[in-house]
Amino acid sequence: MTTSNGKSETSYAPPQGLAADDLLDAWREALGEVLVQERRHWERERALIEAQAQSAIAKAHGTIDKMQAAIVTLRGEVLDMVRARLAEVKDGERGPAGPAGEKGLQGERGIIGQPGPAESFFFRVHAGKTQKRRSILPCR
Image (cartoon, rainbow, N blue to C red; front, side):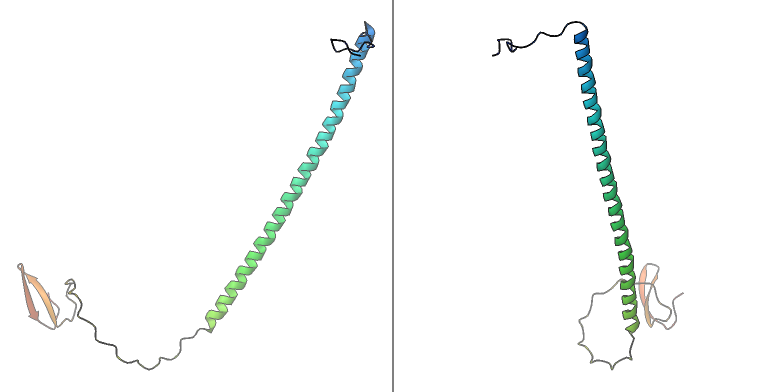
């Protein structure tokens, strides 16, 4: 049976003097051992997790290297195929002329440009007036 303070009626009185000190030292030593064991366990677990991570990273790097090599190989194969196909393309002989197309509509008048070297008709601007001249030589 327990009393109102939570202690059993048959509980022992706390040790006195050296016995109390010895009991505290024993508890400290026991708890210290438990902590040391747990720390070792945690360190082993951490080392295992780190090793697994390093292994996964190394495997990923290996996969990446293989994929890069495959891409380089595939690129070379595609270039070889394209080059081979382009080498087959030849410019053959010119075929016969096709029928004449329909006459188109008159387009809009374009911008007057500089006279060419051998124009039959050209416009010459002189003293603010536009003159139409017939000539076979370029204007000076």
